[in-house]
Image 1: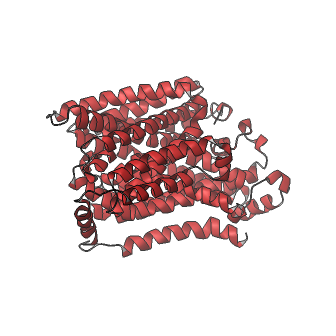
Image 2: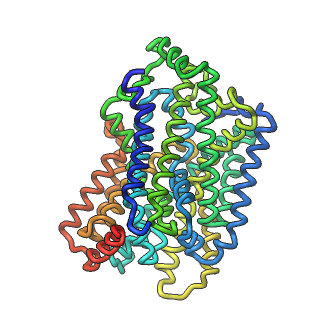
Length: 32
Length: 505
C-alpha cells in the first residue's frame, strides 16, 4: 500500500476516532 | 437494488428465523414504549427530553444513515476503491462537531423555550408572531420528509420483496406497516430505542462481513496482491489510493456531510437528551460507531472487488448487490439473516425518525400552534391525533412511492441536500450569530431549497459538484447578507449569551 492508501484506510479512521476522544475529554465542563 | 432474489430466496430457514426474531424485537419495543409515549405530546415527539447519551448517540447516527451506507457506499467502494472514504469522512467529522457544539446550544435553547420542533425553535428565536417562519419551515420539512419516507419504503420494499420472494409491492407494504406499527405506538421513545437496536445490527454486519471475507481470501495482503494483478482496463476508476480522485470529486464527496446539520430527524435527537453535558460522551460514542460502520462498508467494497473483478460477476451486474451477495457466499445462514436484517435496520431507523418529524410538523406546528393557537388542548387528544397523522403520512408516502418508484436513490440524495442546504446554515447561524434576523432566515430557507433543486436539474452544474455544496454556500451567504440589512430581535443577544454562558460553566 502506498501512503495514500495507508492514510485513507488506516490513519484517517483512527485519526477521526482519536480526535473525537481528545475533544470529548478537553471539552469537559465544570461540574462533570 | 433490483432483483436480488437469486441471492436470497435460497437462503436457509435459519436466516429467515434470525430475521423474524429481529422484527419481533422491534415490534415489542414499540409496544413497551406505548404507555410512556401516550402521556403527552412532549413525550410522544421528544421522549420528554429524558434520553440517555448512549441512545442519543446511536439514534442520531443511524437516523442519518439509510441503506445508502450498506448498499450505496459498498457499491461505491467496489467501483472506486478507497476514494469512497471521502464520501463518509465528511459526514462523520461534521456530526462530531454537531454533537460537541451545535447540539448543546440547540438542546439548551429549545428546553428553555419549550420548543419541540425546529419550526418552534425558529419562531421563538425570532419572536415571529406572523407564523411566516413556522409555515415556511414546515412546508420544506413536510415535502422533503414525506418524499424521504416514501423513498425508504421503496428501498425496503425492493429488498424485502427480493429477500423473501414476496414481490416489490408487498415488500413496500410490509416495510411501511412495520415502521408504522412501532412509530405510531411508541413515538419518539420507540423510535430511539429501536434505532439503538438497529445500530447494533448494522455495526455487527459491517464489521463481521469484511473480516470474514478478507480471512477467506487469504488475508489483506492477498487481497491487495489480487487487485494489483488486475488489468487497469478491468479496474477502471478503482484505486486503493483515495487521492486518485480529483479535487472537485473529493470536495463533492466531503460535501455530503453538509447535510447533517440541516436534517431535522437528526437534530431532534440532540434535543431529546436529558443532560446536555453528556453530549460530549455521545460525540465519542457516535463517532466511533459512525467510523467503524463506514470503514466496514469501504473494506467490503474493496475486498468485494478482489472477489468479483468485473461487475458481471455480481447479480444483475449491479455493485449495489455486492453487500448481500458477498454475505450470502461467506456467512453462516444465521449471520446472513443478520446481514439482511441490517439492510432493513438502516432503512427503518431512518424512515421512523423522518415519519415522526413530519408528523410533529403537522400536529405541533400546524394544528397546535396555528389552527388552535391559544386554546387548551388535552394532551391525550394531541397524542391520538399524532397517531392518526402518522397513519395518514404513511398512506401519502406509499402513494408517492408508487408514482416515483424508480427514483429511490435520487430522492434520498435530493432530500438530504435540500434539507441540508436550507436548514443547515440557518440553524447554525441562529445558534451562533446574534445578528441573524427573521428575514435572513427566510432568505436562507428559500434560497437553500431552490438552489438545490435548480443545481440538481441542470446537468452541466451537477457534473461540476454535488448540489449540496453550492446550495449550502448560497443559503449561508444570503442569510448573512439579508440579516446585515435588517434588524435582529432585541432579546437575541441576551438569549444567546445565556445559553453560551451556561455552555461555558
